[in-house]
Image 1 (cartoon, each protein chain N blue to C red):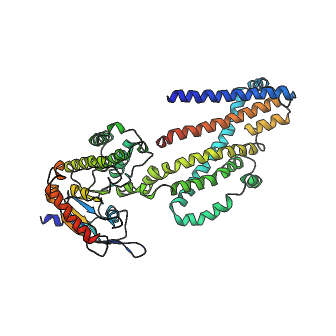
Image 2: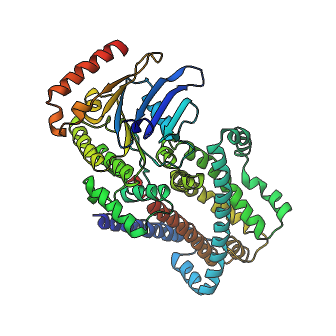
Image 3: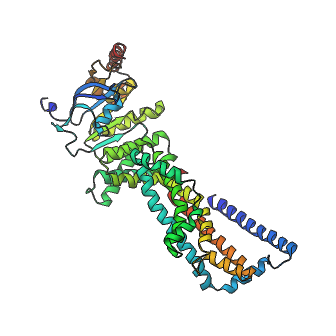
Amino acid sequence: MVIKRRLNYISRLLLVFFGMHVVWYALYLLVHHPMLPSPLRVYQAMGQLGVGNIVVNVGYSLMRIFAGVLLALIIGLLIGLLMGRSSLWNKLLDPVVYLTYPVPKIALLPVVMLFFGLGETSKILMIMLILIFQIIISVRDGIKAIPENTYDVLTSIGAGPGQKFWHVTLPGALSVILSTIRISLGTAISVLFFTEIYGTEHGMGFFIMDAWLRLDYPQMYAGILLFSLVGFILFLLVDLLDYRFMKWRK
Amino acid sequence: MSSSRNNGLCVKELEVEYKSGELALGRVDFTLPEHGIYTILGPSGSGKSTLLRAVSGLLLEFRGELLFNGQSLREQDILIGLVPQNYGLLPWKTVKSNIRVAMKIAHPKGQDRRSQEAQIDRWLSAMGIQELADRYPLSLSGGQQQRVAIARAFAIMPSILLLDEPFSALDAITREALQQLFLEHWQANPTTALFVTHDVDEAILLGQKIIVLPSNKRDAPEIIDNGTVFGLEHGEKRSSDAFFAQIKRIRKVMQAKW
């Protein structure tokens, strides 16, 4: 049953994937201009790129995303935990989060560049900035949503704070953390694109803009496809984590 | 029975106040002998759960004393098992790992892995839920979850076992089956136990003594000896004359104090 449903789902995905190419091809015939090459032409360009080239560019982009997400998770989890478990810290930090949350983080890009230069640091920091506020808020709310008596049995048999965190707080907050990452991942990928326009010769953002400047449209589209693939892989990864850690909800 | 005065759980002039200064639990005084079981009967709001929370160490601010075998309960390393009304299972852990986690926390330097697993299996089959070992709590019925909670409470081998209306959310048939199952295993492993309930029948079926908390917290609780019923075979209790006599007696106390 489960396998059948999964096969069903995958075949629907493939159908949509195929359908998009049909639309693309139709548009290509309609537009009939070098700025929109045919799917075949783009895949040919992708083939000419060489595996090494693709791996380096995709790898750089993935590395920046992972570093940014990891950093945001670690700091966000710590602050969220502090705010969720202590009302004093919540009172202190809540206005800070409340005031900084609506600031469009992408607008901070020039500031981050000024302070941290054009290298990897500013790119990773930007991704972290996008994610961290959402993570803080959702971790805090996730922890607050755990009923206080969930801890009772473990407390009465003498569990320490570390054991309570590991067995109750973290797993209890994990579902909100995962859904937050899923939601903010899209934004993080867009920001990644911006940060890869400057100060680097690797990464999918650089690759796409470089092809665009050289008027090499097939390669530009190949880059966009690969970039989408990066996003797709990341979503798949979150789904996988969700499947692994959220089994108990079904 | 002079030893019973020192041995066991001694609740001495215990009184709990809310922050507002209102009484959460009126003064209670009793000694539960080691390996004994008392039921605590009271209307809602009479402080039954508060009493358990104080004994379990979840509530730290109270007047009076809690002693175990003559010494302060808090100053000793006494293992306390708790079966809450909502079962208290961690939803993100399977049945088996719920029990395993509790055992590991309760006995950090305890048994090796294999004997621990054997212990878990033994209690799962004692509660008739071996086949649920790898299921998650949210996929179980209330009765099944309560069986897991009881298996866990017994498996950690506590010195004191506290049960807070464990069967109150279950239907009558499941409740009777679990009362019997619980009592059988308690008799095989007689842990010093306090059983809180608001059900008169349950209080008579499971307690050697019944502590009836009044609804007016200024009144003293009534402690009723229940040895006659408790000594009977579980299956015969409900139809015995002693059982009905106890019901009458408790009804009278309830009329006066509830």
